[in-house]
Length: 470
Image 1 (tube, rainbow, N blue to C red):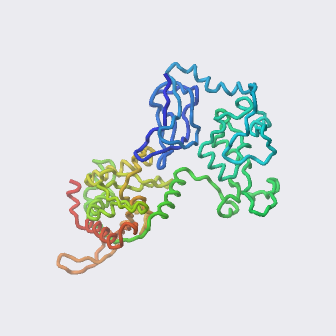
Image 2 (cartoon, one colour):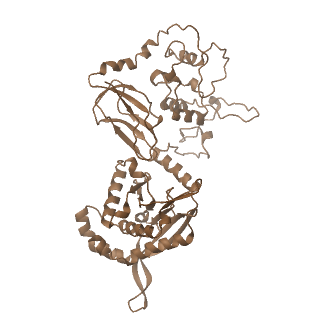
Image 3 (cartoon, rainbow, N blue to C red):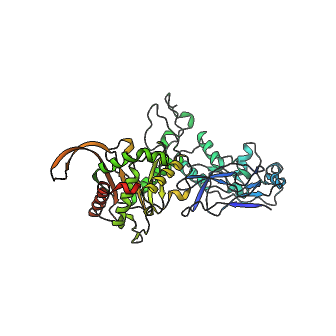
């Protein structure tokens, strides 16, 4: 019996995914729990295993297509049922001998306008284009329904590059045009010129375009860039993570009313405890005791005192959502290849050692590319930590729908004025650092932001941190 595998629900907030690659082809066998395909969601890329063993009978969705959760993706036959697999591709050889059609079908409705050629009703433009390339139409004298299907990625590329899809030879099943076909067509110089203004303008043939200077080899035409290219420029495609970060950052800046506030913190009490416990902690836990779990613990306490900072703001609905739990987002640097926010769920129920373990576990998973979709959603407040890289003060972008993000900057020894037990002022060398809060002015005001930061500062400077490590 055949099994149809559908797009899985990869996280509680995931509604769709883009098929990045198939690990198997039609006709090949696969074992249960063996990787079947890789899918990209809004936050992470995930490898999905096969739920059953058997033979790949039919792949229903091409690479590059974005589909909703529950969409059928692939049909897998039971073990020993592989004899049916060739039937999936049987239509291609049969196409060499077109079956007689009672009457030609009118011009197929492609989602972009075909090239301007005389097209009386009986003429079928797409088959003509295929025959001129030496390829027979997939079924008789008309394009199959599968050839007409265009994934969202293909439609988007066609729109961005003003392409006539009838000129692109599809290599997918049934003549379907894939993302790879479109990109190869563009690389070969097949992209149409941008639409001219109202007044007709002369069109320059590709052969008349001056050659690029030595050392310049952009993968796209210079006129398609939003800025001029300089001699020697190295033009590279953005990877998926970098593109997602760019999109999310712009959305966040356009959504939240960003304001930044900072305070100076004396970390001397924290540093003394850290030095006393660092060797034993490393031996016991297998990683170093950093400032992050101290700051996280102090911040979670401050969020209880100022619940509006642990809220989300929805202006269109005229609503503010005060979260009953604290899900702490932690920004993780992926060795300079990108940044991702992973979530410590129910962080308000953890002591400092538990927070340290969760931060380490999520960082290891992120850098190994093993984060699950649920690991990167549902945060209610976020901390980012540029301090280890030597930052002085930072103003990060809010991780919307959070209403605030805390930046922890470098802690270093500085001379500062302190008051001793006798009430006398004196200059001392202390471990000093800064905390910066970017907050959404739509949700609360400056007084709340400063009081929230002051609460974190007081916690770090006055708490008995020994009992947190006991």
